[in-house]
Every structure is written in structure tokens, then in C-alpha cells.
Length: 299
Length: 307
Image (cartoon, each protein chain N blue to C red):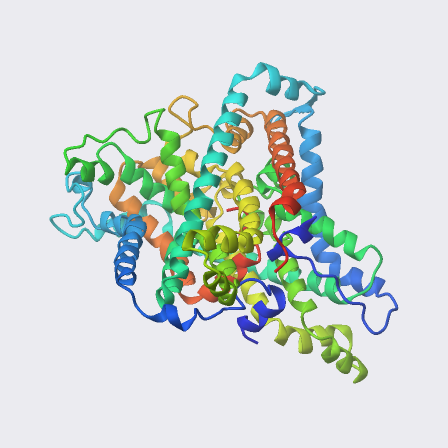
């Protein structure tokens, strides 16, 4: 199952119908070259903050500003990475981030699949009404919920714990919606055949549906991973012990402690950016599909 | 209401061959998702309305105060109107600039042939990298002796204080946010552009329509579902702005870059006023829902769905 098939089923009007430009336009006009030079320049300017982040992470702190707009300082200061690594329990913070993001993505994906299957394939009363109410929360800002959620976590004695970072945000409608849309585009005949062969509902979900929905599951997993990985407001509220912090919170705590120590700070920022960069490079197709389906709603 | 968003079009589930209900089975499958939905979304939404009727400290006993938090917000707290104004200003500037730029860039990339997809992904990178890291490098670049001002100094320009000048700070936040967020709309609009049949544009060309005419009379109407989707999502996102002012300006100078969510956060977790913070949260909720409802009510008039 490829993402193309998925796009055809789920979003017929976005991306799937990739039309070739007419042959006439394939001929290169002089404008094309100007356009290409311009886009390279625009891309460089756009990417500059990341280049500057890495450049600064390799500068001695005394030269961060004295080097002006030069990329290189008098020497390459690798020790910034060591400083960042030891100033906050950085290995712990990175491990927390991976743990929270992977557990959160797994929980979100499983829960979404189960709900999506029920909404797409089972008959029960008020199904479509319930789904619409659920779906309406796609446009509900999570920021509205943080005060009661904090009080809840406080009552449950979960403040400063990783479950508090994982569980409350695994039940959004995006994943279930995306998988449901995809399921609706699949023929029910496979399932009917399996049912006639005597397979139970769990067996059908596991052996028939699961292999077919890998593509949308991957999209949901990638998007929730990134959401957990980048989340800041909620960790800022519910975690105040750096040993339980995720990378964005750790960075923010680090900058609060040594706000002008830019070398180590940018070293830490570089480390925080690299996993996301890898995700973009390796999983760009899933990302593009997911965005077209409303992933990252409103970011 | 969600049927309206083209890329969020809700299909109706087909009835299976056996029309008998699956009540118990469905309940089992839905239990985790719907319990979580109830506990972590529905209950907090209602609870935040209840909490907003209390004087609610972090530790200690909440005291019922009726609508006092709301009357204070609307009549006794000038900062509320300032942060509301700031957030609206941010939302309008950010949304308009984002859509115009994203439309221009995605059209440009669409005509770049095989180079388009690469740059589309490049512009998407800051959407995915952690906002905190993004905001910190911008703070570094925009400090008084940062790289932006040293670059300007090469041309003999004495650069201003981008983050501590109350005239410029909000502009800097908008610029940073555009850089952070524009890749999202570039992707959505790019997908929309890919969905427009080139035959249609060719037909318009043969009929004598010039480049601009084709853009405004053919491309734009065909793209209106994607544009509608982008507008809804971008406006909602812009009302939630928090990390940028928190890390770049601390809401300052004065209150000039303080926003609803930053003010909500401070009331709840710095000033120990969870009740008042919840009133602010409900103000945010009502504003976002009203704007979204207005957009959906206008979409039939503005969006062209005869594809």
C-alpha cells in the first residue's frame, strides 16, 4: 500500500492528480534560469537561521558577537556541545523526549485506529452525530484546556511525571479522522470474505485491515511524534524538574539559566533540531499527505 | 460543519451488507478513544468554564465568585484589552501575510518543474523543528549586536533594537512566525495547484486570457477550497501564539507583545489566578469558535466547489 493509493482514496483533490505541465512549457525560457537562481537565493536566506544556529554553536562565547556576520570564528569550539551536554542532564532530557514522543505516537495511533474502525465499519446508534462532535474538536485550541488539565494532573499526583506529558494529548480527532477517511475508500469485500471464512472482528482488524492501513497509520504516527517532540506550553506547565523535561523545555530552562551563553545554547538547539530534520528528510511524503489532511491543525 | 473543508471532507460511511447493529462491539472499539475524548477534552472544556466562576489558587481552597472574573476581565483589567488587541493585530497581519506569501511562493514553486518539491520541503522544515529552538536562534539573530544588525552595518545602516523597541517588537514576532509557519500553507496550496487540470489553463490561454487573467479567473477560484482551509487553520493557529513572545520578548517591552495565551499562562502559573486564567481561556475559546463559525457561514459565497 503506497501513499499514492492513500491519497487517491482519502484526498482526491489534493496531490493525487498530479498533472504534467503541457509539453510547450517544458522548453526552458531565459526566465527559468533567473527563476532558478532566485529560488536558490531565497532558499539560502530562508535556511539561514539554521546555518547560523550551527555556526554559533561552534564559536567561542567571546566571539559570538565580535565575528559580526561571519560564519567562522578564530577557532572551532566543539566544547560548546560538551558544555550543553553537562549543564542540563541533556542525555536524560533527550531520552525523555524520545520516550514521550514514541509512547505518545504509539498510544495515539492505536487509539485512533480502533476509533476509526468503529466509525468507518460498524453500525451503531448516533454514529455519525458522535463522529461530528468528535471531529469538531479539531478546531478547539488545546490552550483552552491546560488549566483544568493541570488541576487534574495535580490531583492525580502526576505533576512532574512523563505520563502527564503523554496521556492527555493522545485523544485528538485528527488520527481517527484520517484513518477513517482512508478506511471508507477501501472496499469492504476483503472483510466480508474474511467474515464468511469465519474470522472474528479482532482477527479481521489484525490480519485484514492492519496491512491495508499502514500508510495512514504511518502519517498519524509521524504527526503525533512531531507534535509531542515540539510541544512546549504543556511541558512548561506540568514539568518543573529538569530531569523530567523534554527537549524544548530543557532548552528553555537552559536559556533561562544562561541566557547569554549563546555557544552552548545553540549547540543544544542544534541537537534539538537534528531529529526533526531527519524526520523531514526521510518521511517527506507522509508529511505532505498529512498536511493536506489537516495535520498540525493551525500551527 | 466539517463537510465544508475540502481536504477535511467527511464521507458518509457505507452501510455494511449486514445491517444489524454492532452496538457492543462498537462500544469496545470506541472505549479507549471516547473515554480519552471525554476525560481529556470534554471534561476539561466544561471544567474550565466552572473554574472561571471561582477564585481558584493553585494551593488552597477555591472560592465561588460568580461572574466576577468576567466582569473584571471586561471592565476592570486594561491589560486584557491590550493583549486582545495585540493578538488580533498579530492574527490579522500574520494570516494575511502568510496567505499572500504562501500563495506567491507555491505558485512560483509550481512553475519550477522538478525543483519545486525540494524547495517545498525546504520551506516546510521550520514547521517541524521545535519552536523553542527556532525562537532562540531568532532571538540571537535579532539582538542589538546580532547578525541582522551587523549585516545592516555593512551598508552603513545602524540597525534598530528589533526586540526591545515597542514599535518593532510585534513586527519581529510576526516575521519570525511567518518564517516558522509558512511552509505549512505552501504545501497545502501546492497540493491544490497540482489538482488543477492544465487543460483548463490551456483552454483559457487559447481563449486569449493573459497570465494574470488566468491566475485570477481560473487558478484562484479553483484554489479557493485550499485557500479556505488554509485561512481557517492559520487564523486558529495565530490566536494560540505563545512560544514566540514567551521566548523572544517576554511579552514586552511593556505589554506591547503580550498575547492572550501568554497572559493566560502568566495568570494561571505566575500570578496564581487559575480562575481568571480560565475566564481568559473561555474568551479565547469563544473568539476562535465565533471566527470559525463566521468563516464556515461565508464559505458557500467565497469558495468554489464545482471541480
